[in-house]
Image (cartoon, rainbow, N blue to C red):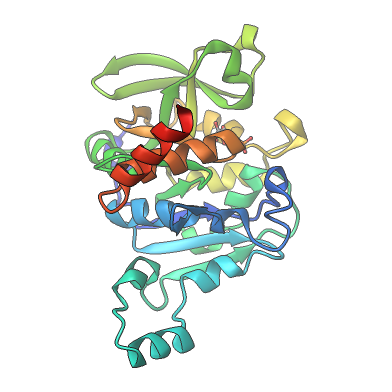
Length: 293
Ligand code: G1P
């Protein structure tokens, strides 16, 4: 295996955001789940900030019907900005929402066939470059961010990388799970990958936590990938086929992860980030203490 072939810089990132967000109804009837705020930033903003910090230059959103407000969020808001400027207000608060002209691309996933299918929908934009994937439901909180830690590892080993974390064994069936090989520091060799295994069949309790760096060859595998767990086209199944062909490692994120795909996880993220904020942490702590008696 010649690792030098799998080390091109990672400049592009795919954000699968076509999901219906049914778990958060009625909040998500007219508003995309990715725009629900954690304190004062929509969920998607955390993923885009993390991507930018890691050096991502091109942002590919895989959207669907009713999700265009996500794209609006990253567009120039002429009326808002001229009104604010007219009132002498600073526009700095909008800085994170600015993506360079031409650097935001959207593709549509017309039918919900699974994560593997969503990623495949971005193939023409990705071309023959390695790329990152961010599942925005997974809020990865830390400095440096999760993807920055992965890019650092990529610069060492190249190939394909997934972020992993350990969960209690009884929870593995909700996730992609790795069969771990040798570990060195935060880096673990990936020997196998299985999507949503039964607890008894799971090769470990290390789950894939929503961040990926993949080589473009995965797109060819996705093109003919059959249905897997839950009757969906699974990214995990195509990634598994790269093992042995290309380097494949897992990075254990040094930081905190919040599962914003669940309501409790969303509340946890909101509270943890509010407590951590310089502008409001102390007040929130007092309020929470009082509330909890
Ligand atoms: C997806 C992936 C799974 C991964 C999980 C992380 O599953 O298929 O491998 O562990 O995201 O959140 P989903 O949440 O779409 O069922």
